[in-house]
Image 1 (cartoon, rainbow, N blue to C red):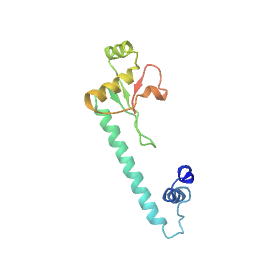
Image 2: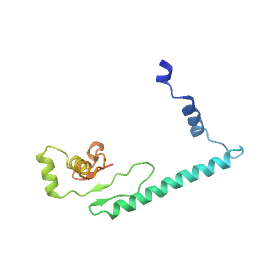
Image 3: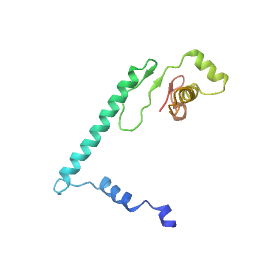
Image 4: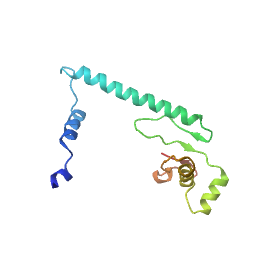
Length: 125
């Protein structure tokens, strides 16, 4: 029981072996591996572009091109009155924004203040 808690399952170990030791060009599975890898990465890149484009269509949100991760970190431009309200409630403005988004729209995001954003800017992930 203890070894199960401390070690990943066998299937996870086998998958990691392929990640750190992929098929080589002279191996039988190389071409299929490359096709599948390119398809997955291409699909993720397309979704990243769509996400960026959609965020940039929303007034008050600016999203830089997404690179290498499954997360977006768009900048939000919070109106001064909302910043003041957040401070009255002793909250970071982006936390206030995220809580309002959750309460009013049912959308859960993480405030950027927990990630060391530049002073005076607000983001969410």
